Amino acid sequence: MAVASILGILLLLGACKSNSESQASTLISAKQVTTQCQAFKIAKSVLPVALASNLSSALCDIDLARSPHGTWFVEIPVDAITREELGWQNSGKVEFGPGNVYNLLEIDVDALTGEVTLEKATNGQLLGGPDQWVNCDSGIQNQQVIEIISVVGQSPPISPGGPTIEITLKNVSIEPIGSLNATIKLNTLTPFNFVIPPPFPLLPNKSISLKQTIIGGEFGDNLLYPIEIFGTFQNGQDFLYVEQVQITPPSNE
Image (tube, rainbow, N blue to C red; front, side):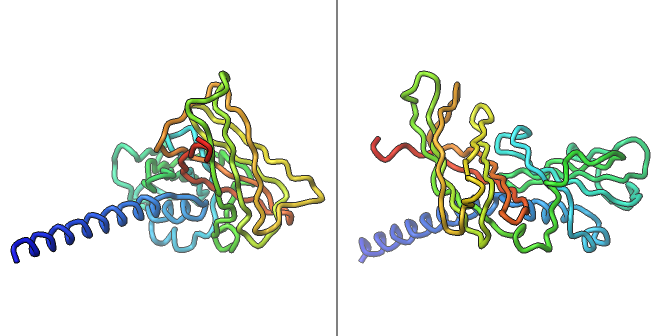
C-alpha cells in the first residue's frame, strides 16, 4: 500500500512537471510579437484610453539591431498632447523631449518578450516611410502571411568562410506574393532576397527556399535568432513580420 502511494505521488509529480514545462513552452511562444498589429496593440496599452480608443493606424517597423531579438518601434503622430495628458510615470524607459506639449509618440516593444522598453514623447517627424504604415482594421495586416518552414544550418560550418544557411518560407495567406525578402540576425545582419520572377508569383500554400553562405557568421545550438520577413503581395500591399527561430542541423548530420 505504501509503495503504491509513493508511486502515485511520483506519477502525479511527473505529470505536474510535464504540464508545467508545457505551459512554460506555450507562454514563451505566446509572448513573441510577430506582427505589426500585435506590436501596435501593445503600444496602445500604454496610451491614455481616450487616445488609444480612437487609434487604428500608426507607423510600425522592426529594428533587429536595437536588441538581441529585435525591437518593434511604433510611431504615433498626435495633435498637441501634454505630459499630464499622457500620464506616463518617470522611469528609465520614459523620455520626454523639450517643453510640455508634443506631436509625436514612440513606443518600443521587444519582439521576443512583448515588453515595452521605451515610451517617448517629442516634437519631430516620422522616422519610417509609408511602407511601414499599418492599419490594423485591415484583415491582411492582422494575420500571419508567411510560415517559416525551416531554417537549416551546419555548426561548425564546413565552409571556411562561414556557415551555409537555408531558409524555407511558405505563403499561408490567400493572396499571391510578388516579392519576398528576409533578414536573419546572427552576429551580423544577413539579407536573403528570394527570387520570384514577375510573371510567376508565390501562390498561396506554395513554398520557396534560398540557401547562402554567411561570411563570418556564427550561431549556436538551442538559441533563438530573429528573422525579419518583408515583401509585397501581387496587388501591391506590403507586409512585415518577425519571428524568433532556432537553426536546425541538416538531416544527414
